[in-house]
Image 1 (cartoon, rainbow, N blue to C red):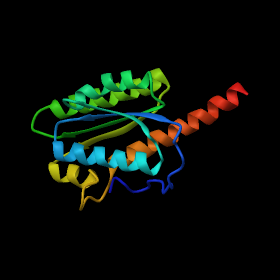
Image 2: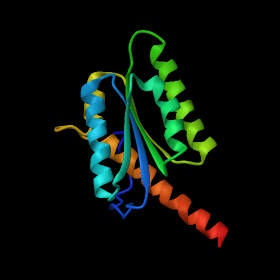
Image 3: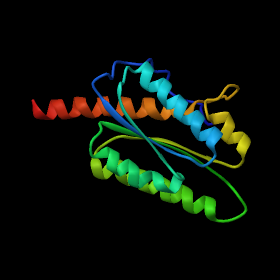
Image 4: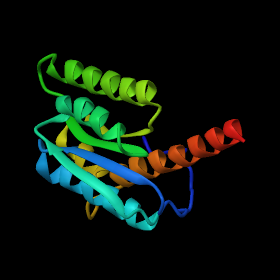
Length: 161
């Protein structure tokens, strides 16, 4: 199970953080579930300054994430790629992963990685945070981005004091 070992962190106050959320439109049921999970996490962590953007697919996530990273404390990227019979899966997964990693490192802005890379629709639905899902990756990716933004704030405050 991919969720094994996840931290059991309780939400903390992140009301002073601004967050950009970019979500793909492909696999609408799954990506809407991921987006709802992100919204649940933002509410649980008391974030009110949120910018939501929808893009055509997972391949387009990094460029919009990069723009959001310029003006937000954290970014969350949500999408899904389901394996098919062509190399498309590997190319899109690699491009999204590499691109989002580059955004985080180049901008020093945390990027919550809410991109599902699944063998089939059933795996995607199980992770989408929908009723009956076993995991809520939209929530998890958002919580990770928020906690990382808080960690960076502590590091930066210690460095400047």
